[in-house]
Length: 487
Ligand code: SF4
Image 1 (spheres, protein in one colour):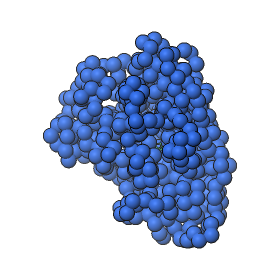
Image 2 (cartoon, rainbow, N blue to C red; image 1 turned 180 degrees about the vertical axis):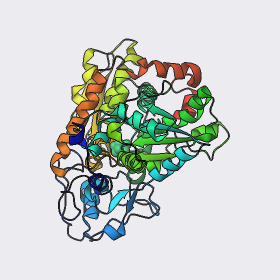
Image 3 (cartoon, rainbow, N blue to C red; image 1 turned 45 degrees about the vertical axis):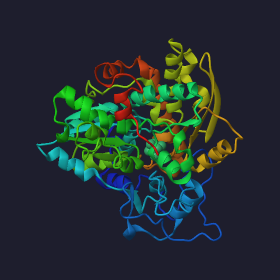
């Protein structure tokens, strides 16, 4: 079995740097449906469109263009303009149109990659004066195995922890913990907005940085609709350098906090305004998250440091900030944030556990580009929508803006399938893309179903962090560390 899974070194490097699918060669084969939902990918220029590659700036923190590998075919530009519907659309003067979603790295696996930050992790691990803390996002546990030819959707979370420990990482934590905190804050904020009959409705989720940047660039008047809650990774960062450091007796400035994510947009997100721990400790130059790696970079790092992932022994997460509920686990799926938020909103509103159907909220699950539902929270009905893939967001936003559709709460994720289809996830051969997304999705739902704790508000570690450190949801300290002004 192990032999079957083992890729040769040459194959491994090819899959890590240029994409696993030999079918996926820029200018030859279109990747099926990377733009979201089940729509077609536009591969030919429309009249008046220019050729040539996307103008990716050298200072772009998320992605990079390798000019020496580029065939100048321009298909990346056409994909971004016509499928993702980002490049070529008007942005405020001086702004770069790239939202950092990284879907182009799946489309042109030859000349566009994430911006590589993994060598900095190797340096931190080798530095005896650094304490390296790694936090793993929900969606990588069902995707990293693809880099090693494991069956799509295999849950490798134990192996990830074991391999990182072997690498020399001091503490491995789970971002599902902070996903639960996101829900505590977001569900509370939603109920508060509903109570206040706030103008800025529907409330939009805010855990996808490519989506929030998209709103910033293209629909700035809707910024007040975004929840003020930060993404789970950045919440994790703020707490690692405050709560975790305090409880573990570690000087926060000696911590190198590494986020292991499915995402290229996180590389940008961690750089701007994400220094809440530093601000609260009088060290504003300290970032909450020092380095964000994609799933593909994890395997590059492990390979470079000669850590054999397939041979790594399973190991558990740390006991502090190392456990999430089932609701935190499904954050990686499109619809997962909505389902998680509604479970906790029900309990906050009624003081009782939600009906059993909230533990498998079929109306918001699946891979249709947009799902709409009316959910009964007991004494209140909510109209909700879930959308994934930036290319299909625009029509939904337009229908909200012109009053054709009315919602209370909208979940939007930039990547098709949500983070399980993230821009930094392993490249998959075009014929297998949809099936792989389904298998990853199912794997996270199964992980949720197998958990004893299914609601974010029931997570004992979350209860402890509020009791011991944060106070209450939407309280003063929680606002300082877990929220951000989006003005
Ligand atoms: Fe990143 Fe997930 Fe958003 Fe994709 S959907 S840009 S992986 S947060």
